[in-house]
Length: 182
Image 1 (spheres, rainbow, N blue to C red):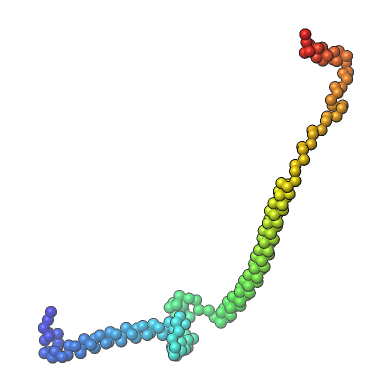
Image 2 (spheres, helix red, strand yellow; image 1 turned 60 degrees about the vertical axis):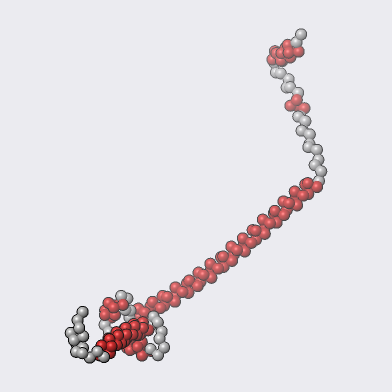
């Protein structure tokens, strides 16, 4: 480190605090102006709103009217539209919003119908369950009748058909006699 004489103070020791104050104050003012400029630019582009800063917005808009669109496009990265293009986009946007509202209304109606049908179906299921319970209770309360007897076979099916041949009739009779046996 150098001596106070080498730093340019030349023996005046009271000058050092004043100089450091001036440096710190200028740094603080520079930072304040930097942020103030950023806020005014953001206000001009309507990203933030600062009370009493309309002058910056108006000045920017007046300046933008006379600037070349390619400069604006280069700085903002957005395409500059003509008035006709902007009006066409506004019309398309309004038409799209109307279509979305109509479709939303249709969807709400369909959803309402589905909800109504779902509730009716749920009520029907509850009614069916209640009826099943009532039928089960009624069957439990009634005594069960005896099961019906199996139907008797018809007489024609029980009696063997007369053989067409007498020899064929003798064979079963002989078999029956042999089975009854000695």
